[in-house]
Image (cartoon, rainbow, N blue to C red; front, side):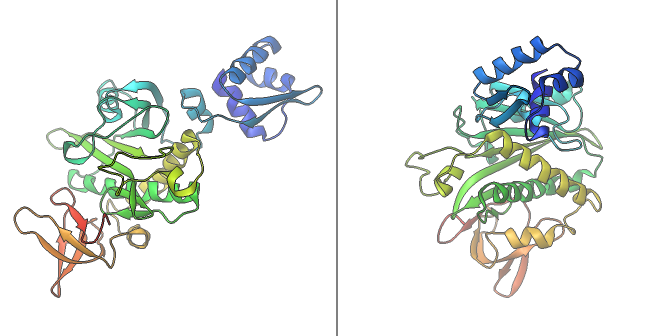
Amino acid sequence: MKTKILTALREAGDYISGQQLCEQLGVSRTAVWKVMKQLREAGYQIVSVQNKGYKLVEAPDILSENELKSLRKTRWAGIKTCYYPVVDSTNIKAGQLAQEGYPHGTLVVADRQDAGRGRRGKAWSSPSGVNVYMTLMIKPEIAIGNASMLTLVAALAVARAIRRQTQLEASIKWPNDIVLGGKKVCGILTELNIQIDYIDHIVIGIGINVHNESFPEEIAQTATSLFLETGKHFKRAKVIEDVLECFEHYYDEYLKTQDLSGLMEEYNAMLANRGKQVRVLDPKEPFEGTAVGIDERGELLVNYEGEVRKVVSGEVSVRGIYGYV
């Protein structure tokens, strides 16, 4: 009921009468009044005027299934939304839900993670009330060898969503970090569950620094947040919705060819590494060169002494020579 009333208030945009809500939802005026009271207690600013009805003036920065579901405009991304105040990891939880039969497009969101992870098993700091911790679980019918490109699809979606939110030029540090002001604002961790000859499910974990006002000394030079870059606070649920909308769009484009041929141009335009000197930390043969862009497989093209080398995501790390990017 809360979700339906929040959705109705948002769709109305202006006042909606109590009678209209009763008829639309098939409930009594008392039931509507009780929900309005509960929403106000949760921090929603809802005004009521006699003969006009109710109007949602402002929503708090709150994460809940009701809030997330009432904002949803996507076709399949977030079709099932699961919110938890605390989880070990949204990726772990999403994987468990996949095994329990939850559908393609299931979204897992947490206010805090106790065992958040980045690439290569690195810990991901996940305090409550501050950031976005989300995982989208998908069950694609694609070739196993094409799955790694979904990290780049997700990076493109997050960069576009952050641009929408902040009006700043968010960029991508290949393959899975989003950068603002030359510092990391988001990390993405994609994990596959593979059977003998097919993909059972994929979880795409996304962590976005939103309200952080500072960072520990050891990462202060390389990490930032939406707040630090803009001086503004954002509604985390709306950030999540924007990410889902952008991902759904780019994922549909990816599925046409199961590669990045339709997304290469836009990805390369957002690539922070492009045209810059990078150090490729290949354990077998590290080298330095100039990043050119990505190809249709999502491999990073690096010009090394006149020869263009292809760097495969997951095999090596790439670092800027003069800084994070």
